[in-house]
Each structure stands twice: as C-alpha cells, then as structure tokens.
Length: 556
Image (cartoon, rainbow, N blue to C red):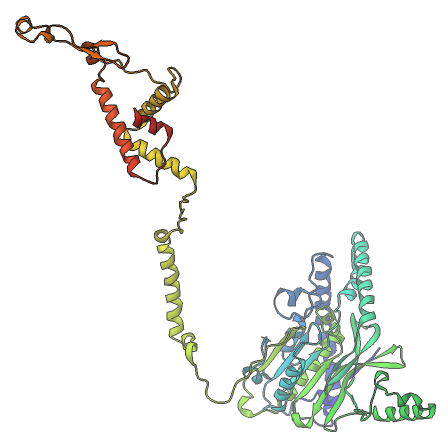
C-alpha cells in the first residue's frame, strides 16, 4: 500500500511550483529525527491499552476532550493535540525575517451562532449521520465558508478502531490473556459483519459522496476505512418521469419499442451534473484491491468553490483513520499534519491585523438530534416585558428575593400547619342521639345519677328487686313523735286524745302515725325534685324522644 499527497497542500508561506519538492525533501529529512520519537509514543500508547485489560478500557467514539477523549480507543484527543502543535518545518535560510507560525487553540463547539463565525476552522465529528436539521447546518456552514479563509474538516462516522485494537492486542498480550482477547475479537468481528451488511452510503448535497465499501478495509499501520470518497453529483431531474403505479391504461398498450426508447431517454436524463464553480482534489489515496474494479481509495478529499474564496472543506473517509489508536501509526500522523497545514494555509491569507492572534479551531460533535443554531434578528436587541427581569441588576435582585421568599414560606409553615378536617354531624345518626342523652345525664348529676335512674326504672317499671343495676333503697330515718300533752289532752278536743284514722281506698282505717311514717324522707324528696326537673327539660324540648324510663319517672 502507498499514499500519495497533493503537492499544492504543503505550501505555507508562498505557494509555488518548487513548494512540493521542498515539502517532500523536508519530510524525508525530518522522518529520521521524528521516527524514534513517534515509535516510542506508539509503543507506550499500545502497551498502556494492553495493560488496562479487556473489560476496563473505554471505546466511546467521537470524544476529543476529557477522559473519553484521551483514554478511549475511538477518541480524537491525540488528533486534537497534534493540531495544536507547531509545524515541523523550519524557515529557509534566506527568510531571516519570516514570522513565527501562529499558535492554534482548540475549543468545543455546542451551538452555531454569530460568535462561532470567528472560528478559523471547525472540525465536525458526527457520531451518527445525519442530524435532523442537516439542511440548516449545511447552509450555515456554507455561509460561514463564504466569508473566506475558513476550513471545515468533516470526519465520516464509522465503527472506530475497536476491532483493530483487539487484532493487535491478541498478538502482543500475555499467554494467559490471549484467549480472552481472541474471544473479544471474535465478538467485534461478528458485530462488524452485521454493520457491514446494513451500512449505507453517506451523501451530503453539493459537498461529497461517501460510498460504502462491501466490507471494512484494513490499511497499513493499524488503520481501517469503511468508505470511499467521491465528488457529489446530482442526477438531472426527469421531465416526464413516472413509476409503474402511475401508468395509465393507454400506457399498457405500448410496444416493446416504445419501452426501449423510454429507457434510453431516461438514461440520458440521469447524466450527473457537477457545479462548474466547484473543484474536488484528492489529497491522500491508498492503493488497495477493492471489489468492483477499484484499485485505490480516496481517504482525504479537498473541496473548494469560487464563491468561498480561500475557504475549503476537508473530508476524511473514516473516523478509524484518526482515532487515538490509529494515531499511533506514522500514516495517521501524516494525515493529521496535512489537515493542520491546510488550516494554516487557508488562514495565512488573512489580514495582517489578525496575523498575531492565535488560530481558533472548534470541535463540533453531533448525533441524530438537531444541532442548535442561534439566529440574530437585524437591529438593536431590546428587552420587552418580563425579559427585563433577566437583565442586570434585576436578575441579581430577583435571585435574592426568590431565596428570601422560600425562607419566609419555611418560617410560616409551622404557623399555618396542615388543613384541619371538619366533621359534619348527621341528624340520622343514632350515635348523636346517644351523645345528647349522655350530655343531659351528665348535667343531671353524673354517673351516680344515671345509676339511680336506671335502678329506679328497674324497680318501679320492671319490678326487679336485685341485679347488677338495681341499687339498694335508702333506709328512711326513723320519725321522732312528740310526747303526748296531758293537759292538752284533757283540755283539747276529744279527737286529739285518740289517734286519727284515715280511710283508705279499701275502706280500712289507717292510723295517722302510719301516714306520717310513709311520707318520703328529705333525700327522697331531693331525688324526686331532680327527676321532675329533668323531665321538665325533656318536655320542653320537642325534638327529644321520651323513653319508657322517663315516662315512668314522670308518672311516679
């Protein structure tokens, strides 16, 4: 396999016919100096990946910063670091006053806005293709390229270098770990075969076409390639194109001659059309044997347009050509240097005022989700309505007010408490009647009064004389009769000397002393008075039902 370079790419100071020869001579002279350094770096990187084990390393694709960008097999941290390095070339002896190369700084890009138009180069590393707003992103990129002196680097997404890593690791791993590495290699091969069967070509309108290869091609020095780059061609639109479902009934009566004529006319109409103002230059190619009659693969393509000025688009055929694992090879490093030189050459034609500033290179990672694009309306931006609350110093004041409001709510929470559940009484509930009766009985004397009333009810109504609720009747105190007055007896009326008799209902005579003894005592009178008062309260309340016990008490 061999790689071919375009001579016009390597000129940085003054592009001329001798620049390609000077560039090739310097690469050969510096290869011996840098060969040992890159070999050591490659060995150290490979051994660090091997020592990390089969299950503990990262395979995230597309990251260029952080732990994934530096440690992942499929990261682009090494490519990003190489772009920041100064070029290996030294100025010619006669160019003593030549300016030193400009510093190149990289940063992450998450949103396309007016501010990002100041970038000198954008490296677009999509994880999946295509984003939902592909057309909007492409128009923004073309408008940015129209400003001139800009470079867009597009890396076609692929499966990365995980399989290639296990190919190499299975050979250099210790004997105890080779079986595990081979098992993981077989798994990666199976996944890759499934991916090869469903891989589709990537076509970006007016830019390029990445034709999917039948299978992944393994290049030299631990690199892989899944696509072949070609210029984008758009088929000519058919004026009278119709599918088989749209044919009318008269079309079925046409003969075979008419069908052949239609096929020939359709073939002539499908002639691809290529913009006259656009130029496609293959910068790097690999000589391989690919099914379909191809003998070479274009791994790095440059697209230029007259409307863009000195701006250009650099397309890398596969991400596996520039991953961290692929960057351990000299071929991948040469491709990264070519991209770096293209960025510097495009920015070298800018104004002298900005020649002292550093070159700004942004890395844009995307997937199938839309890439945010910020558009600015013409005129002076004005804040209206509640937008003023987001401006300084109101934004700072509002933040403190909101915090104090939260503190105030927490302070008043114990005062307000939780809402109380109100219970409404129901008239038809019998428990309310019992509660009312218990309240009346409590007002009348409490527990003792209730027991006396129950005992009285059981004695007088039920006729019970014993039981747990029947209380013993209080014994009336003996009545003390005054001694008879003899003088009064003699002088008094005759009926005072003899005891008086009271006729009873049965006609018997009852002594007056017996009548006096049968009168209720003082305690009994008090009980009867309390009973009468309770009965009066019950009678005054028309809504209170009268029980049998109360009616019997009233009668008594």
